[in-house]
Image (cartoon, rainbow over all chains, first blue to last red; front, side, top):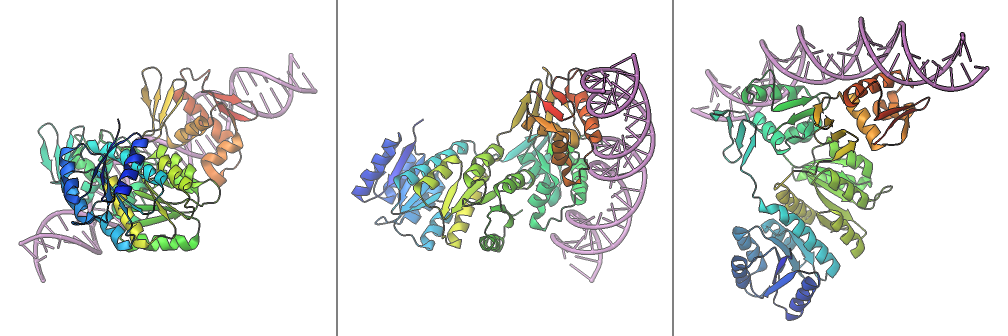
Amino acid sequence: MSANILIIEDDPAMQSFLVTLCESAGMSARVVDSVDAGLKALQTDMTDICLLDLGLPGRSGHEFISAARTLSKVAIIVISARNTDFDKITALDAGADDYVPKPFSSGELLARIRVALRNGTREITAPEEILRAQHVCVNLSSRQVCVGAEEVLVHLTPTEFNLLILLMKHSNKVLTYRMIGQAIWGNAYSGSSEKIRVHIAQLRQKIELNPSSPTIVINEPGVGYRLVA
Amino acid sequence: MSANILIIEDDPAMQSFLVTLCESAGMSARVVDSVDAGLKALQTDMTDICLLDLGLPGRSGHEFISAARTLSKVAIIVISARNTDFDKITALDAGADDYVPKPFSSGELLARIRVALRNGTREITAPEEILRAQHVCVNLSSRQVCVGAEEVLVHLTPTEFNLLILLMKHSNKVLTYRMIGQAIWGNAYSGSSEKIRVHIAQLRQKIELNPSSPTIVINEPGVGYRLVA
DNA sequence: AGGTTTCTTAACGCTTTCTTTACAGCCTAT
DNA sequence: ATAGGCTGTAAAGAAAGCGTTAAGAAACCT
């Protein structure tokens, strides 16, 4: 699997340097010299990573980032000689994945490309909007919870809902009382397990087929809880 | 449900600076000052992002990165004054997600934290660590223990579980009564071996194929116990 | 403000787990 | 062979942890 790199850069010297660098690392590189051409390439070419020079003539690189984000989740690594905080922060917040100041070492750039590729591989599976475990399914966007074969809608309080999706996102793993407290109440969490016990009980009342002998939310004595999927 | 930041940093001034920075951004921050404490915190605390100072005394930050990667996919942002290419590349290739050189601007660090949080929502499934010895396998993340060819699930009490993984992590080595006692009961351990004998017996009842002639947990008369893998 | 929902806390019974004690069997050394 | 120390097992009491209920506090929504 050789990665496809899209280089958006107008300086010919830097163009050839980046192309050579990428190809020497076994990746295939394609160059465009404007934001418009870059956006067009994103729609027609298979692209794993964009290397973007912020200092382009015409439309700014920041525009490219936000426009590209509406098109795809491709990783964007900004390369720029404009190294003010403002440039970095706006680029990263607009959707860039990394920001490498010029001058940069080729080894570091390649390492950061490898990081982006590593992250990119898990992106293929889109974030699941619906979580399932046994006879329970949760719609994250509508915050609705169905139970049983007939998919009866159940109303959960905010805390119960947070608790459920927390356990679901870590299904089959034991979450310690500490983890649960921190995830739901943040730093303000005192450390006692009593609160959690009550909310777990109420959650079980609503989602377990037989709350007195739970099959979904399982207690691990002395440690915490585990959701079995 | 705000982000939980684990700060691994030994310098008190930098500690408080980072804590203040994170909390001013509405995130929960927690500080440890060593690699070992950091790894322990990863197992007991809910953590979205690690801020790691590479220049720690004792075990190096690089060790933390690779060890943490076997535990979870938590995002790791390295903060370091050692800014050679070598440091950056090895840290990134070991599994770090970003590398911020000191001195850094607080705005940039926060922006890079936001990037990591954005990426982190994609997937949380960590590689599950499984220990094996003969016909016994232990899943550390789900705390489940299987025995025999049919992989029957066995329930262990907290003490039995701790005892088992302690022996497994030092398999084929003899652990003295004192070592076992201190590892499981800490400083409160009195020094008598009677407690240990009872728990070993109950553990054997559950994991040995023939508890009366054990093949896994072997007694070393006058010294302690040894687990043969 | 009134009423409703939700959260937090405390209490209690029940179960699980831990600790202690006692004793029998085994091995070793005298 | 026997005494002494060490190990394995069983049982009972103590302690801790969990599930549940109820009541007051807080937040939320008309």
